[in-house]
Image (tube, rainbow, N blue to C red):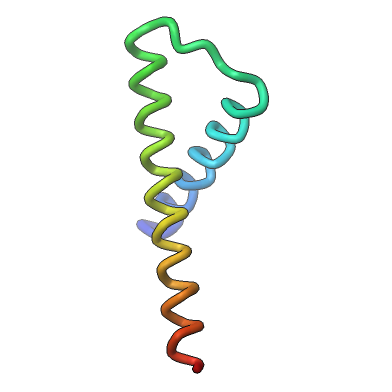
Length: 62
């Protein structure tokens, strides 16, 4: 259940960040800026963790 919830949150952040890049959601209020910041942070950290796991796996194969 914990992994499923983690994947749901990461997927939601991916969708939100891609939508923000394509449609440029307005960040006029404090709440929308906070949501964008949290989603961007989740997106960045999950992407970095994926890249680290990928390169570590590649390094071990060689």
